[in-house]
Image (cartoon, rainbow, N blue to C red):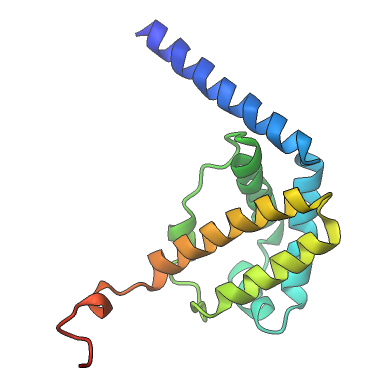
Length: 155
């Protein structure tokens, strides 16, 4: 049992080391993740469509959310294990959240990366990851399997 636990810990450490090395080669570290989150969410608050949705949900809790998002991106990019939340559950019941907001979120994220990413490889990595996250959240929150039912499709 102890050997199995030690083996798993070593495996997790190796994954983390590889991720950190990959990110370091692209100029990504905790300082960049902090800057990305701070810059992006500062822009979200100023966005005419996204800002009101985010602020309505997070009013009075922005520092907590910023910390959570930094932990999330650190976990995703650096495999730090800092994030332990449940993104889908966190977005259920958000007032005025709709599938059409995700492309706006992605566009703003892309603009932010255009301005601050250290190189095209870093931008590409973060955008591909953000696109997967947006697709996953959109499917989880808005997908209706009944729409795929051939019996329901117009002839």
